[in-house]
Image 1 (cartoon, helix red, strand yellow):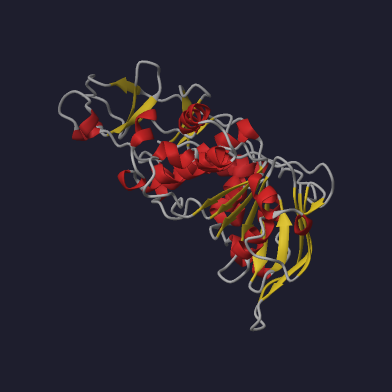
Image 2 (tube, rainbow, N blue to C red):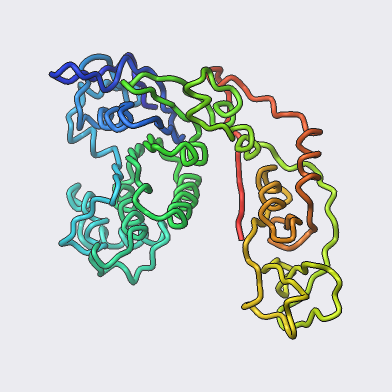
Length: 379
């Protein structure tokens, strides 16, 4: 556990970057620091590994005051990931990942073995091992950066906007991969971002800071969305916070309709429906077609692939997204194997929302408050 107790950072010119910050980052969980520019997010993060020295207050790591620890000892137990990965340009991917194990005295063969394992774990093809950072995409470089931070198997990881420098599609992939890794590894993570959506998706708890480094609110994502403590928090998390809070409500039983489907290569002539759903041999949705615009067989060129595909066991937000984003206005609902179970319209999802009791959210300041899960899938 990482504990901030009345931590302040004031610079010689009088600027206060962090002001009397007190919070706990629980062991094995992701604590996200989020807030506007100038709120002290990165300063707070860097005080944990003493890249920045606090002016006053204490930071403890598993009960040990970090001021009393040797810097080298402290940092050996902390992985650090930054924007643009911060890789050594003159070293191969494999050598970059193995940097810390080699510094700790691990022999070259063991280092290479562990580095290759980590590349696979973060979703990189082993074929990239001999390449240099300049030969990789931004997303691939970030994966290498995460692998390098994990190389010495640190119990704590600090991540400073690690996914902000990549495009939205790659960013979402990296976030999903990060959550998968965390589910396997259970690290204690402090994660800095300026993006409230990223904070809500990744955090077990989210700490919102005001300009000047004051803690405005710390809570689980679902509680933060539904119980902002003041107008600053309400404005920061967004006016659509009620809609986003649906990510934390499980989908109830919906009035699903059966859907006319066709397979690739079939014809849809004579069909009077405006839209027909195309599925593969496993009854998994591939997209929609408009029969009146097709003169022959269904091919990939005539598919409308836009639209969310929601799992029946997933959150209400995904079901509503599916209905709203579908070109047919019929949201596609699948089972956990991805097979079609039916379709639903937006007004039917809204009715289900009205009839569903809001989840009883625990006060995150009380022991035992658990993070609500939220999942979505897209097509």
